[in-house]
Image: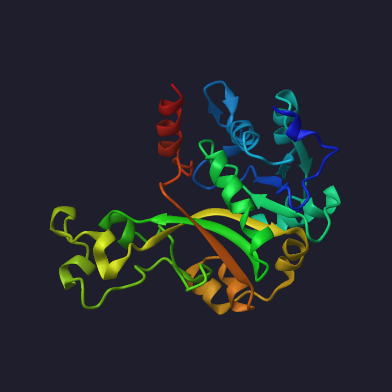
Length: 278
């Protein structure tokens, strides 16, 4: 790990662009038990994620864990980690506690890197962190990339985002949005074969965007977020970020040129990532 992970130098949102990466890690997973400790080429997955994050410009990389076994694995490989409560309902709640434990100031920028992204691009972390110092109207930052396949566009597990004229998130949905009424036939909407689908990138003059699950926050807002009343749209879509929009908080979006590396949600995902490391 680089000197950037020194626990005595928390990231600060200054003109220099310093920030802290927090990686929430919990042992319970219905599809992949003990996921943070899953072996990837000889290292626990959460350590792989932290090592990738340390290649970014972050001043500090910290794993926010819910189990002492995660702390032990991180300590064995020089990764800073803190123990948070095991009963947090979401990753945002866990990171809010981590901000308090680390003593981060309200304007400090925090980037939430998921603990199941061992191939996260350090450049993407930097890009999302850089949003907030220049976008004072936004409370959060995130990322997206153009959708290039019909399968992704119609897949409810692929979250879509529509931006407004300022590059802020207008809405997130599991549904195919925006839906180009006059540019797509019913067969395409129902999931026609890829070969029969029109060029998605040309659809209505722009490509639909896939949301990438990485977020930046100001620490003060992150501590406030769990106390906000859950939004009706959040409950319908099962998308926590809709709570911020519901309460009038802007979310700035970095549009990446390429899709991120694959994450790990299932045993099959884990084997694919292991093969890439081999």
